[in-house]
Amino acid sequence: MRAILLLLLLASLAGSSAGPPRPPTEYHLFFPTVKLQPDEQIEKFEVSVACGHVVSVINIPSDWNVSVSRAVSSVEQIHASAGHGISYLRQLRPFDGTFRIRPTDRSCFEVTATVVVVFDEERRIHLSQPQLRLVP
Image 1 (cartoon, rainbow, N blue to C red):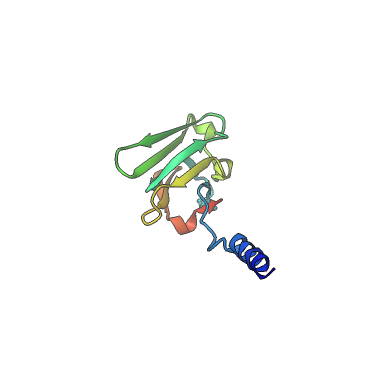
Image 2 (cartoon, rainbow, N blue to C red):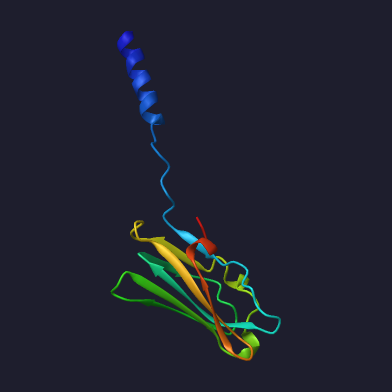
């Protein structure tokens, strides 16, 4: 009888020892609100993924072009640009959740972006990983 109780106790403890929660394996990228001057618009942007892999690209807005460069190095690049001036954006919300990214090495995993805005002159806005949102 004691042996059966001991086995039941061990079995229940083994099932509950899941350990610490595992980090997500993939993320969807979301952009912050970009501070623009009244007449500025977003012409293009680039996302750099260090020690990670761009798994998929979905929901590309009309008249926008998106490409992914996968170099031998540990940095992948997403390039996105409007086909014509009429397609320029005031914010990057249409791209929220469009890019699915998987870390390949968490010790150096980092996602950054550069947004190019135009009006009279071209201006670059750099976004660091803390400014971007990675949602599992």
